[in-house]
Length: 153
Image (cartoon, rainbow, N blue to C red; front, side, top):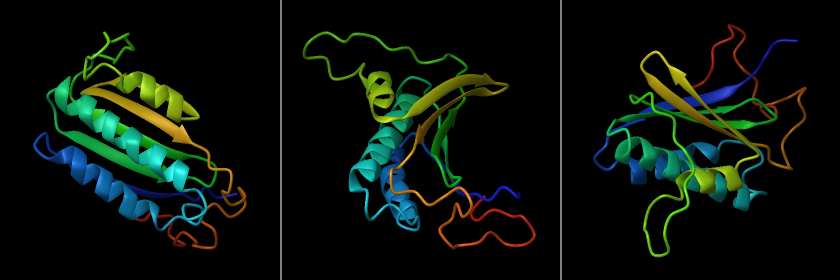
């Protein structure tokens, strides 16, 4: 069986990238068959994108590359930045306005992982919507081209 996936990639600059990333994500999620029936999952994905882009901009002081990939089972949300230091969860003091991003992503995502790469790191969160199409037709009837290319990648 051929692997079918739908995905998009975009780079977001440190200046103004978080808001643009949320809007870009919401716009692209509209093309997936399950999103209208699962607004809470869409909101969780958008909040995760916001947290991951913010971490890349604030802590890595780096532009961030965001990749969304839908494989019929999981929506993978991956953010790459140029700092190889892996994020860690901490317990912020009462009233602190930062320090909750890792905890938020852990609570929202079905799975998540971090890994160092040659030029920085990537953090990926996976969301498995309850209303997703079967694995036999991951794009809900929106077939991948015969040449095996992926939309938007």
